[in-house]
Image (cartoon, rainbow, N blue to C red):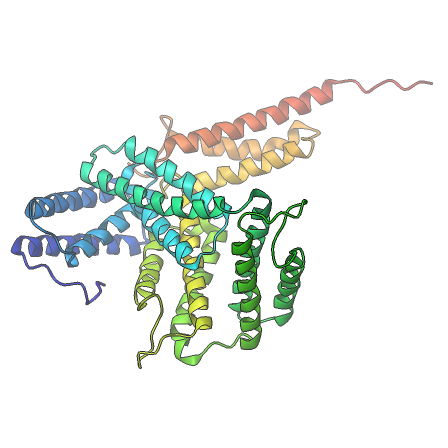
Length: 447
């Protein structure tokens, strides 16, 4: 799993730590692939404690010595990545370890946005809010056995992400407010064309449609510049014009290629398209089919392909760099996949997978009840019987107020109980409204 370029540790103590960490990682991998039962909190915490102990020993060995990255660091990262996703799987999303994997994904996304110089204010706003949330989690971690060095590590990762984010936000601020919607529109069009370019069936007419939109935007310029109502050149006009030219150039390249991808780069392309498509499916069925630890393999595949670049580009067996079209297409697929992973992570509910079937049923019930309420309610309380019966059947599953799975009390009891209460309240409101309407006499008609 480790990259061959990463050297093995020279210190005997580090070699012993590496051996134990590999064993822990292998156990995490085995647990990740085991679908015969749900992930139990106690199983995760045992492996978490073992990892923390080995990292503590590693830090003592390295104390006061110059440190060069070796295979131990890579395995530590793998263990923390897996444990982070396991914390999400068991519903402990609001504890520091759960933040580790998300900071890795955010940093990758920010690096790619910086490299491509292609992003919208909306992209940055989402990550800014997520980093703020993660920062609060780290500083108010509810871990029963906190590890200060892990929390310090995650805090440092958050700060590095914030530094990258700040640099990108500065570029947004360098564009005049009236011109920002145009910049965002251009980013959206370029991304739409990238999607069209990687579809299994290429449709030139869809590209021509975007090309027409781009030309319409270009026609708004005066003497090649975007200006305000008074004819003054808007701040950021040059940068937005460059982005427009970049979009038009990409249009030509995509139309010339007509959906044909060079054979020698096809293996990487096929892997990335497959990852993108699988993550897209997961984003549609997340509530019912995703185990957060599933994201680990996707992320590692993407990391390996991303890190195989030389000076920002891929090279073939003869050492020749990929042409611009290939480079842009592969980078788009990587960025899109990291984007999916990010959204799947931030959409993860703080509920153990053991309780997710109940939680998902309640989410569906709530949506149905809200829809009924928004459409004028019911004419008779009898219409609410199916909802009431389902809610009571779920409520009756509790033992001493807790949802049990065997002898275990899975994480996320508060979230499920709160959602159940919301459903009962909605159901009650609809029943009261229906009964009140039934008791109200119809208005008398004049004879």
